[in-house]
Amino acid sequence: MPALLVRSEQATDPQAAHRFFDQLSGAKTELWTDGIQFDFYDQEPQVTRVVDAIVDHLRSAFEP
Image (tube, rainbow, N blue to C red; front, side, top):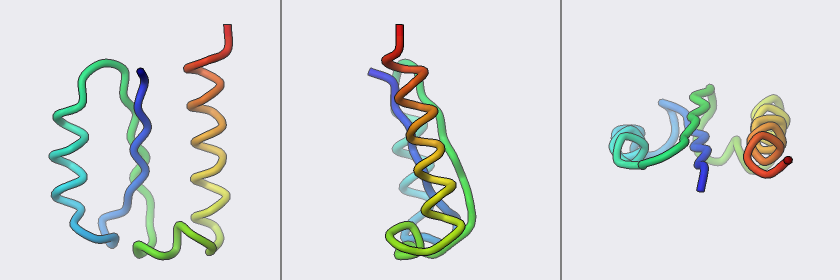
């Protein structure tokens, strides 16, 4: 299954996110953006950027 990882260098433990992403096999995409951990819950522009990335990811992974 294709994977999408959205993270920030300012979020919790970015090194662990890099290691996790590197260990994934198959189709994978990463979006590194700005913001602290909690910005991705309810702050702009992080929320819109992430939702747009998720929509694009799901379309490319599951549309015929």
